[in-house]
Length: 54
Image (cartoon, rainbow, N blue to C red; front, side, top):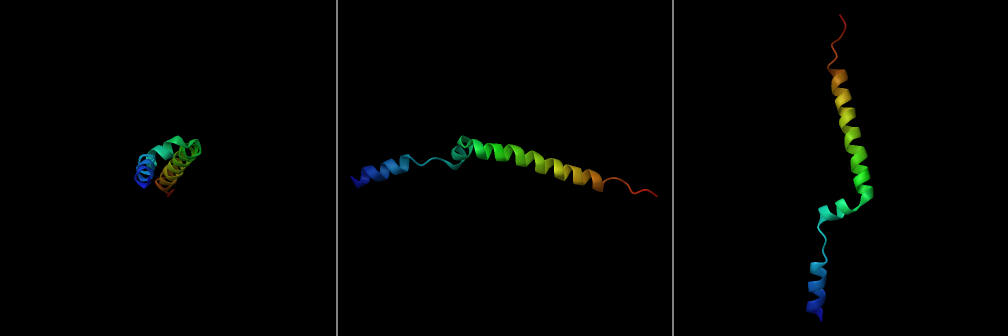
């Protein structure tokens, strides 16, 4: 009986990437946060690269 229980638990283990991709809230968070952070960093880089007026 205990061998069957351990086999069932081992076969039910879901990979981490599948758990992330199956969760719509995590996907929504990733889809909002990554582009936002990317554009903020891009904007900071652009502002830093503006030459100073003489």
